[in-house]
Image (cartoon, rainbow, N blue to C red; front, side):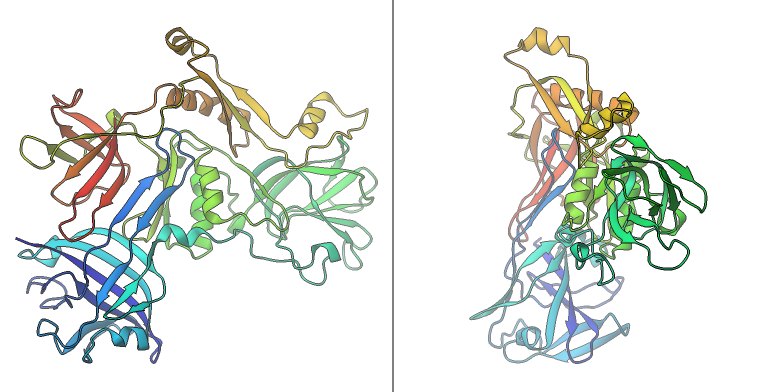
Length: 527
């Protein structure tokens, strides 16, 4: 029986302002009486299911992100065809009601003239099976229509592309010093051991009149400022006014610091952003809050990451253009096997650590002998670099190291003040050296956004283990559509390939849906 690709296309209807959902397919398909909705005829106007490839980036050397490639969807637009009904059944998502819309001689002209495409969902189902049995494969964000002579071409991007937007959006207005006007405001997330505060000038009136004001977090609430220095010499913190020389006062409600004199080279330690009374510190917590509070995603699940919490140190200075995707990559990539991705429905941001094959249960079994797979194929993961005999993990970055410390500054502060990074090296893996020698192995230096030495010391050996013995990769063609299998799940594979003869688990890190409803589905797995 033929497999059909089903598409649900949400569009903005210009005339009503409502969202309308259109239903298309690669072949004739009508939902069953037991389905919801029942007896719904999909318009058989999709030329072929597009190719979609999704994978967690750089297995074994991951720096957090996920790669997605989606080919355009091509809607056929023939002159009146007997296989195309005279009307389309469309769901008005906004009003919650079904519509019957007449189709012109060229049936999809109406999409170009009356609608802007928003999102599209693809499912696969056997033609003789109910809609409830359809397997969800992906959800994408649509781009603008590209008309062709007898078709409409619809470019599609995965939801991951939605995160290519800057984290900083609030800007300094005309009341700020001239050098800051129009620039985005700084942001500190987690715990910054040292940063340069933003100088806002002398307060002209009110409670703090006559004091110098310094911003640490763009006017946002913070947890605190434990230390404030000038050239490495600490100021004394005051709980209230007045403020004398070599003293500072903190307003945690807006992250402002006040001094009675203007230091030559000010720096401070900041326990950062505290939205809604919660101090954001841990990797998954931070990514989840940024994604949901910005409106880029509706929900987040950081449990897979924050089961082992790691405190971060992120300083985005005024004018910074770091995007959400770039920052999430940095944060998830600060720990071994960290990743972030959007689920198949495009509704939940998931942050976690890539699992190991034998540390959990498989969600599905594939046997070459029964034909559920045509067999494993070796894959080049591109991780053929020399094994690591040692890893040096850098943490606690100082964006503005400075050599102008005062003579009375203590040694610890001078080290903090003058160095960009602090480092945690692992012990040399003598087994790697014995096997491969110094010439056949390497020392790897990795940068992280971790804030604390203890966290860096705990992560460094995990990185070392990952880079000393990279995983082996395979391509696993499957014939059941892999229902319920998503990235980072485990599958049990029984094959004649070495180590799979008696059955072995592998972790899914990618999936490739070939072009057409009969296109082969390939899972990319590692052992």
